[in-house]
View (cartoon, rainbow, N blue to C red):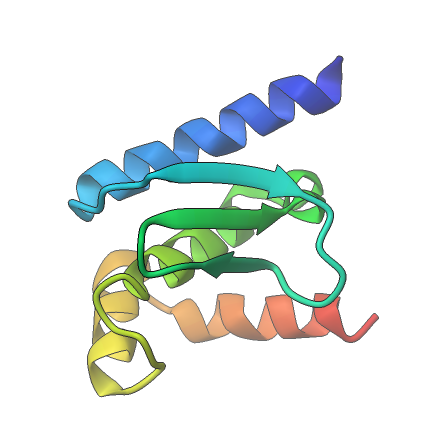
Length: 104
């Protein structure tokens, strides 16, 4: 099952980033989502859109880091932007690639 393998690899990536960012994940789910790439709750539950499994690692990392950083910063303000920059470099380029995908 290539899909299961992709899901395991994706979850492994999420856990690696969570360790790197010192974030405790309570639950991690990958499932179809109709209108967003990911969501997180304040108590440590993360859900990622299964469509991410078809994207390249760079875009997956963007969504993973984006979501994990919301455990520290609940908005997309200056602090969140500087953390994104610190961990991913030119994250705006990835953000615009994701926006293009969302519009199709």
